Length: 404
Image 1 (spheres, rainbow, N blue to C red):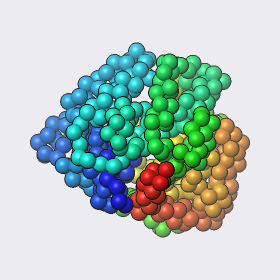
Image 2 (image 1 turned 90 degrees about the vertical axis):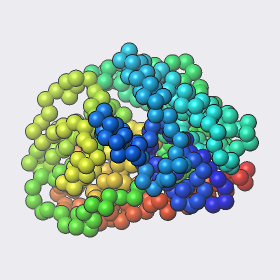
Image 3 (image 1 turned 180 degrees about the vertical axis):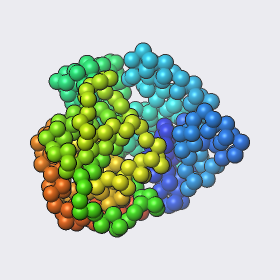
Image 4 (image 1 turned 45 degrees about the vertical axis):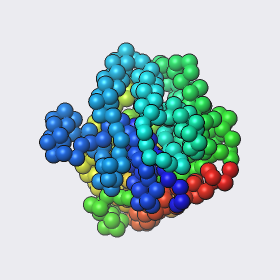
């Protein structure tokens, strides 16, 4: 790579995959973020007393001198988010923080650079300042934008007993997102599904660049031993993610009501986003375990046989690759990242189709040789989404930005 880059992101999105790859290539000038876990042991202990999760916001691959953060302001921003969320002002909560972060990032005196890379909803003000300096800009659209919100709102209207009535976004929220697309020289998406959604919202197809996520895998993952599946006992299916309508959780539960409890079981792991009591009493072969820590998540992958993602819309869903790295075949809809090869390392099913979910899970329950074959193929597939592959995509993206 021949150009120098600045990356800007709120939180530890994608485990800092983009800045990590750019630093490895020798072209990262700085990472700008809201909060970055301290290196000092004493400060780390103080932070851990408040929130152990805050310690995860750090990459050991990046030298500290490349990172610019706003630790005190980020605490204030988090308080503002909590206050607005308590008033059920979700969009307002994040819009305010995103704007303040983007303005602060744009005012930093950073080393000279050729390219700015930021994420949607928190990059407009920075990009506008960068354009005035003659810097080329890239925005990574983390989701399908307003199209996804409309889809979810329609689903909530159909099923108000699960999540209540939708809350409309304030006027101008998605208009600001469109201004990011207009300001950017390139708009990055993580899947062809997301690309189609943005084209439908007016983004020129030639401006969009599809770049899958990167996942290096867990060194403690069981590897090929995962393909030695047990021949008896119920098939253990895992759902891991936000427990919300957008993920298709209501169709998943309906599907399991059609399956034999002696042959299959379902573990649901993740943060609850449904109304209290929405799903009533779960049947004995379906269990909800709540939110899990990073270490606990690894345990759930290890003990599962199949991973299920009946999502209605996702920018990518990196859990697909995580599951495959543990040798789990993935059953997913096409409404997310292009990971599953249908019939080889998992199955693709239509969204909103409980019968398709049930029928596909039944295939694995009835045929453990198929399960073992897909398990081996899933493990191999997970090795395609490497940092090297990400860096190759970044090189191609750089060429496209400067060839236009």
